[in-house]
Length: 247
Image (cartoon, rainbow, N blue to C red; front, side, top):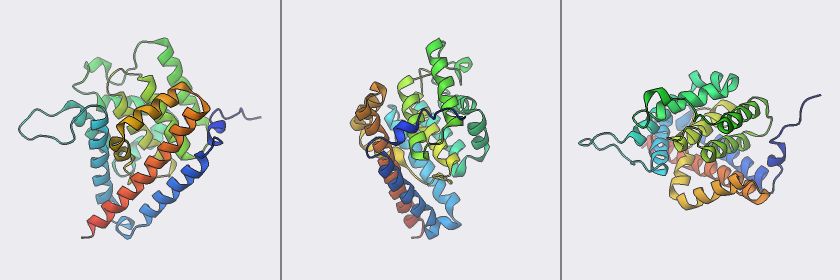
């Protein structure tokens, strides 16, 4: 007999299923756009760039690289993460599905260059509690059967509030969530830009994360619903990118 899915109750919280389905439909529409049928590598590259910039800002980094100044390490790290995920993250999908913690470590090693010592890249904080929660997260990722929007929201929220590395955790959390949507087929080519939704509402983002951390029904539902709204808004951004590519 299969063990109960620990995430199953989350998928049944009020509004979660409906918001997730709206996100799925919006992303499917973006993938069907005529500019994305064959030209998706170009639009995916633009989406990845916008995602990186928004993720950088959310972690206190720059929005753009300044040619005459030293590169902002937060933005540089976010750009490296985006590049690794661009267009479908084919090299990371198998790692994510087989050994999620290795994929998370790889993204941290990209995000945290020049933000921590080299020997700390990809290595969680030496806290037994952090290690246990990461192992639990890995078990959930490889064993859950919940819809992709729920899983993406859970890994995003858990890494965001746990701060397992102590630096670049936000960029990693959003990158891993993006990887989850790609690997699940929800956003196969990584066309969506949900990061912009959060960048435009940083206060709401932090408040929703606190609700997730509190673990109440209301807090969890709000995080999951807002995460799907971000995916839906990111799909609209993907369509705008596709439209612009045809001008």
